[in-house]
Amino acid sequence: MSEKKLRTFIAVTVPDSVRINLENTAENLIAGLDSRLIRQINLKNLHLTVQFIGDTEPDKIPEIIRIIRDLKIEEPVNLQVTSPGFFLKRNQPAVLWFGISDTSSGLHGIHSRLNEELKKSGLNIYSKNFKPHLTVAYIKPGVNPDLLRRQLDSFKLDYMAFFIREIALFSSILLPAGARHEVLYSRKIEI
Image 1 (spheres, rainbow, N blue to C red):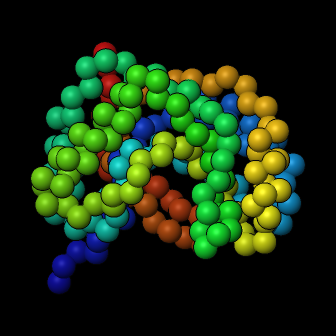
Image 2: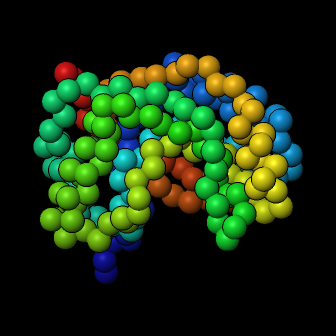
């Protein structure tokens, strides 16, 4: 009998100072929206997904860990939290997020190298356009996209930035109350 597949992704961890600041910022943003239609995530799980892998055979985990361990990151990567936005699902707002600006293109380089190495290892990975963001809430159907866009456009965001200090392989279990993430491997970034 084969082992059950794991839903996996590789992500940058967010420093506690940024996570706490973003938690307060997200609460202020959500307070201006219809709370019946918004489900804020537990921001203790906050992370910046660099590569979603998806359903993964357990015997592939050591190879993914090797790829993360061998990943070359030679310069500091400074990221800035930017304006809020949302992703659509069937023309309805579905995911509320804060953008990430990567002025050095270091994060995009990490994403590209991971993508290339994971494909070489035979993994069939999720390959959509990479849009760095921090998910803060899920939106139920019924929110007017134009009204939401106007509310987000008028939202003032305090400056928040951080260096990538850790990259990790996570497994994710989807539960009715929200996803639960478990770190399978973590690598500190020291430059």
